[in-house]
Length: 297
Image (tube, rainbow, N blue to C red; front, side, top):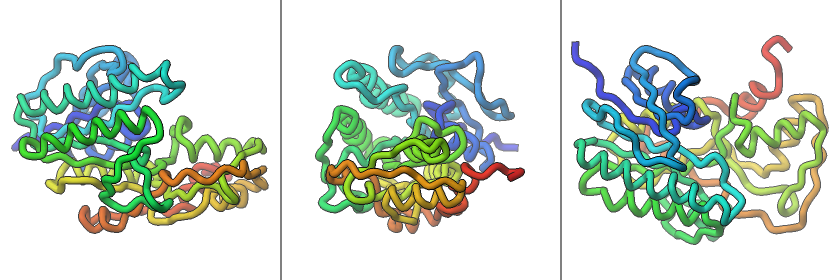
């Protein structure tokens, strides 16, 4: 029996990374995943190996590269702010680690390289970023460091098979560090939420399991370039929170800050869905219901 190729997933114990690990294992792939907590991995499974690595503070650790044919760089810094206190950590994870992984992939003959990125690299003319937009104009250090990572990854296009994944607001179980989850908890607790503009930013959140499956499909494939990974439903944050309130029986306490909404929080996804022959399966109402309504409720 032939042995399936192995995929290296950085940040494998994180919210997005763990979803990718589970989806890859379900697809029959072997996985090596990095974690900052090697003594207490979040998952044990046949075909899964964990490697300890804190990309903020250490260089790429020794590991077995034989059999690895794809790398998914999904590690994220533990905190994105404050700047400039966190600048070195952001640079280490987003730039130095990306370059180290690209070089290691080149040396060891890796076929495929995926980089997780963000809409923070853009300044779109509208609130909906086009699929494949390269109009770089970051407004913060995090976005600047991700641009460096994107450009470095693209430079290896003749050596590896690179794909850059701009991920728009994943949400789901254990995603409490992420915007949608945090705001849902505020709705449940009856806490005040301040919105930009009249009704908040435009968003198209994606359920975390759907995102994991998209990453697994990309790791298997050969499609290169930029991909927007988000949900297919677009709405203002205020509308999303009112829906959440309806589902959990709370009226959200929403107030406008008066500031214009930031245009970097939603991205077109139809072109990416067509290229991947994939689409998110969990719609927003179902996803919110899973988070807000107990299974026995």
